[in-house]
Image (cartoon, rainbow, N blue to C red; front, side, top):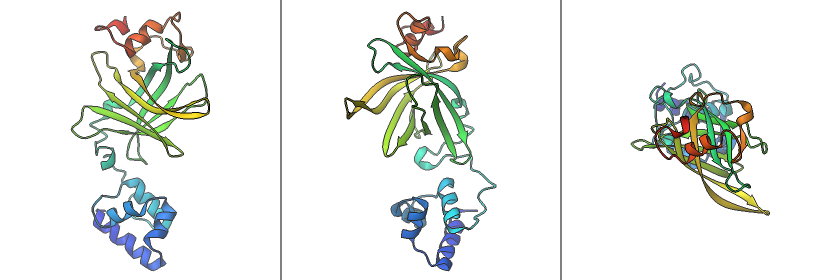
Length: 234
């Protein structure tokens, strides 16, 4: 069903039920400005938005049986097929927060989410706390980078990555906030993602803090700070 037909049916249902856009915005947790843009055809409705409106108005717009394979425009409008190469399991590596010179590794998975109609990512295997994160993947049009976006209680995290490079790694910056002695401060950290299948014999025990004496330190350091071709895979 095209956007014009969807909007017409939504407006008809709102009239029948005697509700306005303010009510719909409250029930769906979608801002009125976003609804206004969709209703005026200035911005197409994403599938998640349509599903929320369906639930709020208790109507069917016949969208559930035909999930889209194109991400919403606000995440780059990329197709599932074009970005299939991004899906998979990665080892994420950054510098440790509290131990100078040490590194930290955790698991990151990227996959296509049918309900969200875009690539999503999930982090896990943290050894220093329950910091699992779920977010969406944005691939800006006509750009050479990707972005991993997540939020918790209005606090946004942004990871911007370029690649893959000659090692198949994605590298970039993680913009986040950290609690320092009771005060939250903005922080930027280097971050690298390496496909798990490129790291031979990687085990669950390898996740967590990586000290200079650990067997994985040189390999992880060369992924985060590459020196020359192939160092990290030797």
